[in-house]
Structures are given as C-alpha cells and as structure tokens.
Image 1 (tube, rainbow, N blue to C red):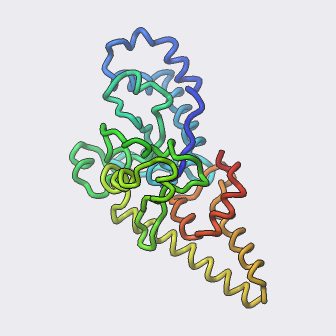
Image 2: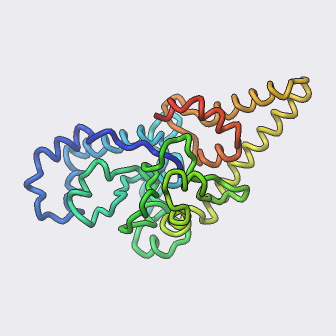
Image 3: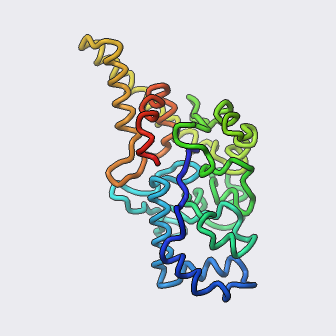
Length: 277
C-alpha cells in the first residue's frame, strides 16, 4: 500500500448527475442510486469517472497495487463467468450501503482491482485469494488506513519483505499518527493483501530488482567505476523503474520495487516527489 492521490472534485458527468437528481434520490436505497448513476448517459459519466480515478491512482489498484491498465493506458481485461470484463471496479471506501451521500460523494470513491473475485457472496467470504474491496465489502477501514490518507509518497507506510509479505512500517506510521497494528490488521485481514498469490507476485518483483542491482554492480566493478558512480547508476536504475511511464502510470507492486531498491529508491523519490503530486 502506498500514498494514493484523491480525486480533486466530482467529474463532469457525476457533477451533472448530482445537480439534476438530488431530490429524486432522497429516500432511495443507496445501491439503486449508484446503479442509476452507472447507467446514466449510456454509461459515459461512469466511464469518465473511472478514467479519472485511474489517472489519480497512476493506474494501480488503491490497495494491492496491481496494475489495472496496459502500456497504452487502456484497462486490461480478463474472463469472469464466461465474459471478458475490465479488471477494475469503483470502490466505495466507506460502505455504499450506509447512505446515498456516501454512494455519490466523489471523496468516497477510488479504483480497485475487483479483488480476484469471480462473483458471489461465498466467493468473497471464503475464497482465500479474494482481496481488496471485494474482501472488505461493507466494513470500514480503521482511522488512517485509507491509502489516500497516507502523508505523501516520500513517507512509506508499508514495505515488502524478502518473502513478499506486505508489512506496516511502524516508525513511519508513528510519525504520521497511524496505528501500525491497525494498518497491519487491515493488510492481513480486512483486505487480505498477504495471501500467497500476492506474496508470490511481490517476491518475484523484488527478486527481479535485486538481480538487476547485482548485475549492475558486477558491470560497474568490471568497468572500474567508483563507489559514487555505482551508487549513481543504481539510483538511475531505480528511477527508470519507479517513475510513471509514458501514460503516467506505475508498475505493478510499486512498493515491492521500492523496498527492493532500499536506500537508492528513497534517494531518488526524495528528489522526484513532483512526479507523484
């Protein structure tokens, strides 16, 4: 989990929907109001919202950091129940069952990866691979555990271990007045971000980075590079992997890459925070 940028305001289609239908929604079941928005203007307003969320989140799931888009910025697809669908959904960070205001409030909206769910209540509760919003469902995140509330990209609230486990960074949490134990429980239980599938994916990313660093060090030694030149070369490698791509999106499991680069990532991020603002 990393710092995620919020929407700056309601997108045009959502704003128009709210302006024209506020009275109509009084007393309406929250889920019905959301479904009505999804269908308005033949889905154009909803697609506009989803696209803007992807921009704000650099193309990643708000929770697990799976990449939701391809190299062109288009949403990737996968087969679910015999249909090919986009691998993303709009997540209501506070439960959409609570009120119409929460359902239609742009401050409550984020983009997630559908959590590997193939659909159905049982799959969400019992399948050990289901993650993110599909796992959380109508439960609330503890105070400070919304990635959009993390201070900024230079303050890592989590890091990734050698085995791919996502771990709350307790010193950073303490500095940000976030309960590290709450964040770890959110990671492990509420969002299921340390299931075997995600741990394996993050460990693969970390091992790839560490191999690239090793190979670069070997090349620098062969070329007789100084320690300073070697460190600069590793910082450049970190920047090449950590910076947004040509469509402004980040690599999958960005925090795993950051953790594997260690101090070199932190040096590069400190100088390039503007890329994530």
